[in-house]
Length: 125
Figure 1 (cartoon, rainbow, N blue to C red):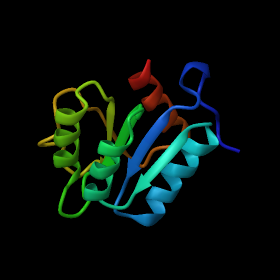
Figure 2 (tube, rainbow, N blue to C red; figure 1 turned 45 degrees about the vertical axis):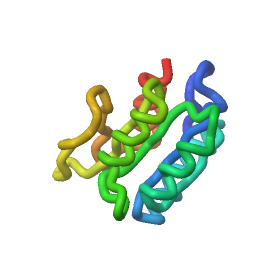
Figure 3 (cartoon, one colour; figure 1 turned 90 degrees about the vertical axis):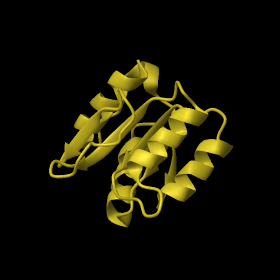
Figure 4 (cartoon, one colour; figure 1 turned 30 degrees about the vertical axis):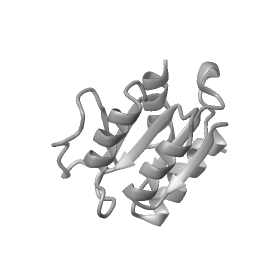
């Protein structure tokens, strides 16, 4: 069993998007096993639609490569729609963080479940 996130962030509504189905599944499972309500999107366009539709979203986690709407564009457009929504960028160390909105941290792969939970905990607090 994966570690649970500490108290105050249990049950947050998190949108996760990644173009790799295996990584998307892994991220989703880590977060669900930690007690969060997770919405998954396979591309930036779908994620942006969910950002628009989910009124009580607490966090967006996005990869760099997402198709027509990449991670940087998704986060920029999300910032315009929901300026206070915390966001986390996940990517390989070799991928650029260029174009991300100011203040969006990056968690570089490979990372552990605990690394992810600590990263989101620092964003949500």
